[in-house]
Amino acid sequence: MKKILVSLLVLALCTPAMAASVTINDNGDGTGTIVVDAGEPNAIVGLALNINATGGNITLCEIDGTANPTFNIYPDAAHDLEEAEEGSYTYGAGTPIADQEAAGEVAVSNSFAISVGALNGEETPGADGASTVTINIEVDANTNICVEENALRGGIVLAGEGGGVDINGEIVCGDITSGPACWGYDCHYRGDVDGDCDVDADDITVAVAAWTDYNGQTDLGGGKIIDNLCSDTDSDGDVDADDITDVVDGWNLGCGTCTPI
Image (cartoon, rainbow, N blue to C red; front, side, top):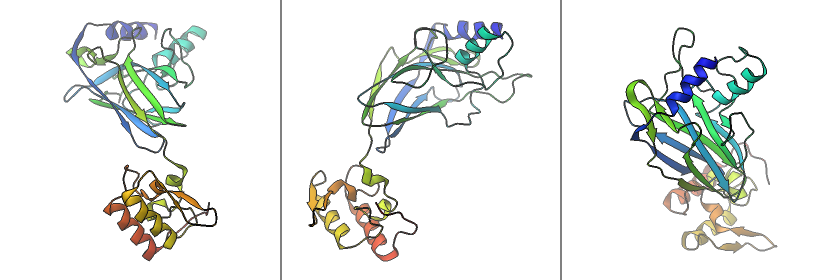
């Protein structure tokens, strides 16, 4: 295992031969993705990137979801286990979250490195890498995310003769926003803007107001003041014909299973 780890490190430190793109995508609901794309037919078999966050807090970081066939070795988890007992690491054990400046696995925080590798052979079948890798992120508030190569581990490694890859020496930054609570209502997708599990005149009133004043508020009386953006049923940053269609559907069809707020 120590030979494997050394090989991965040496490969990661190869002179970069080409560039890959890194894109940060915001879903607007407290989740987002970091997409690393080396382009077809290249296969990313090693990944070492720093992730830094400001504003909010990163609460979850996964690569291509929990079950990930793209990668089968977490070098920093292997380092920790091998330090404790040589030969104790098994493929697929550990997490991709690592210390930025030293070898070793750490917990998710606002400053960590992604460190993963893919090995494929008789003893470790099935991890071929991928031309595009998706890192899923969850935050607890509006958060600015910045991504850059990890200097210790070397950035991005391709299969075969692809060698090392850089991201043009750039620090790529983007926001992942946490939408308002109303976007999480059970029937929000049907136009229930106040969380009472139906779509009625109140919801229509707010939707009409939101058409021209997205960031304003509507006073429905009785102390009930609703943010107009709650009528944004598809959470895409505006209230348009699609959202009005959802409200009409909710008016006619109801919401189904729903827990009132």
